[in-house]
Length: 74
Image 1 (tube, rainbow, N blue to C red):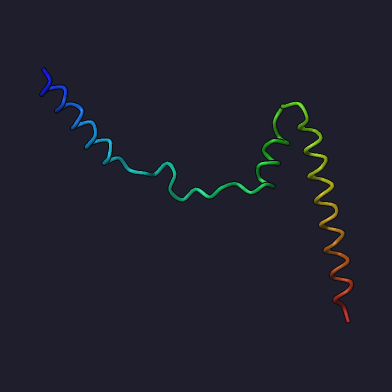
Image 2: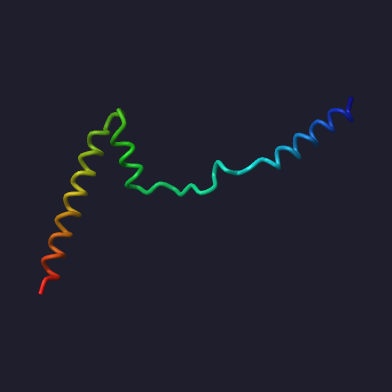
């Protein structure tokens, strides 16, 4: 009985080590912006505030881009 149990554990260990690692390969961690966007799209309490903060951030970034383009003109 011990040999059968040992053989079963050995086979399980061998086959467990042969599995592919496709679950974690190629995945990059999400950026803070992506995480906030997912949170803002949810129905969780406070999601509306996150959406507002993302909108304010987008607005400020757009304004800074306009100011940079004006400053770079000859």
